[in-house]
Amino acid sequence: MAVGMLRSIWSYRGFISGSVKREFQSRYRNSLLGAAWTVLNPLAMIVVYTVIFSQVMKARLPGVDNNFAYSIYLCAGVLTWGLFAEVVGRAQNVFVEHANLIKKISFPRICLPVIVVLNAAVNFGIIFGLFVVFLIVSGTFPGMSFLAMFPVLAIQIVFSVGLGVTVGVLNVFFRDVGQFFAVLLQFWFWLTPVVYPAAILPASVQPYISWNPMFPLVAAYQDILVHGKWPDWGSLFVPAVLALLFCAIGMRLFRKRVGEIVDEL
Image (cartoon, rainbow, N blue to C red; front, side, top):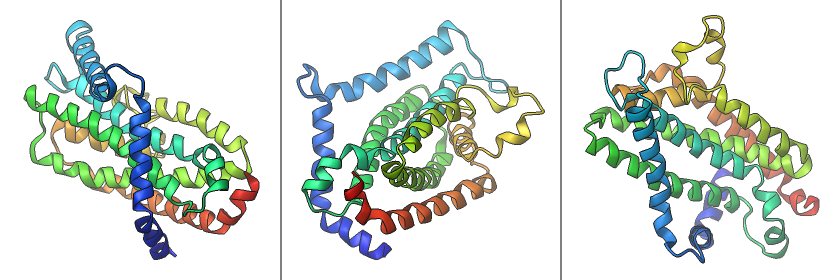
C-alpha cells in the first residue's frame, strides 16, 4: 500500500508542485513588494531576536559566554517549533478546508498532506536559510556538527506528518478533535523549552519533561546551533519511534477511511 501511495504521489507530482506554487504566489498577491516579504518577514524576526535580546535586554544563556547565545537559542527553538506547528496545524484541517476540491476533483487524497508539508518546507527553508547566513556573518556557525541537523529534521518531519494526518483524519469525523488539538498546541509550546532553558525548571518537574517528544528534538537543534556539538542520539530514540508509530497509525486510518471522507464532508 505504501508503494501504491508513493506511485500516486509521483503520478500527480505536477498537481502537487502546481498547488505549492499557487499557494506561495497567492500569499503575496496584490502586495507591492510581492515575494520580497518572504525575506523581509523572517529577516525582521531574526533582527528583533538578536538586537533586542542580545544588545538591549542583554539576555544571556547560562554557561555560554557569547553575546548572541540566547538569541541563537531562541531562534533555534522558535524556527523549528514553527515548522512542527505549521505542519500539524495545517494537516489537522487539510481535508476539511479542501472539502470542495475533494468533492469535485478526482485525485489521490494523500496529495493534500504532501502539499502541506512542501509548503511548510519552503517557508522553513527561506527563514532558516537567512538564519544560517546570520550564523556565518556573526561567526557563530557551528561547523561540522551542523550536518546533524538533517537526521534530526527528518525525524521531526516524519513525526509531524504522522501526527498531523492522524489528527486530520479524526477531525473529519469528530470536529472537536481539531479544536482540542489547536488548544493543545498552545500548551505544548510552553511546556517545551523553546524560549527558556530546561535547566531553570524546578527539580521536581525536570524528570517529567522527558515525556515530551518535542523536547529532545528542540534540544538537539539547540545543542547543534548554540553549543556546536553533536546531539545526544540516544535521546532521539523515543521521538523516532513515535514518528514511525504515528505514521503507521495515520496511514492506516487514512487508507481505511479515505472512502468515507467525501461522504462525511
